[in-house]
Image 1 (cartoon, rainbow, N blue to C red):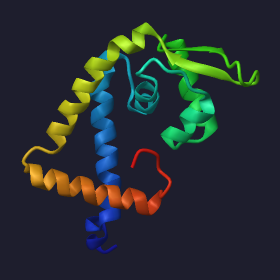
Image 2: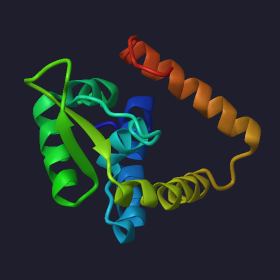
Image 3: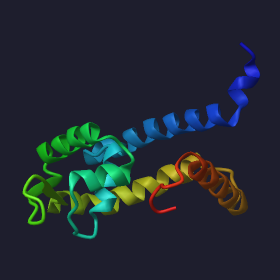
Length: 147
C-alpha cells in the first residue's frame, strides 16, 4: 500500500481522534468519568433536564448507544431519571450533585489535554486548525448542533 495514504487528511483526522480519545480516557479515569459521557455532562450542566432522544441527537449517536451510556451513568450515580410530564413514555435525565461536582475538574482536564495535544502550535495555528476542522465537520454533518 502506498504510504502516502497515511498522510491524507482523513486518515490523520481519524488517527488524531483515536489518540485524543485514548488520552482523554486516561485523564478522566481518576474522576470516574469517560470521554463518551462528555456530551451528556455538558448538555445537562446548567441543571436542565433532557430526554434520552434529545441527548442522543445532541451527541450524534444512536439511541441504543445512548441508552447504554445512560444506564452506566445512572449506575455510577451521575444521572437521575424522572417522569416526563409531556410524554409518559419517556424520562427526563438530569445530573446528580455527584456529577455536577466533577464538572470543574473535568473541564480543567479537558483544557490540559488540549494544551498537551497542541503543544508547539501558535495561537494563529490553533485558530486555523479549528476553522479547518469545523469546515470538515460542516461538510460531513451540515446539521450538527452548535456549529
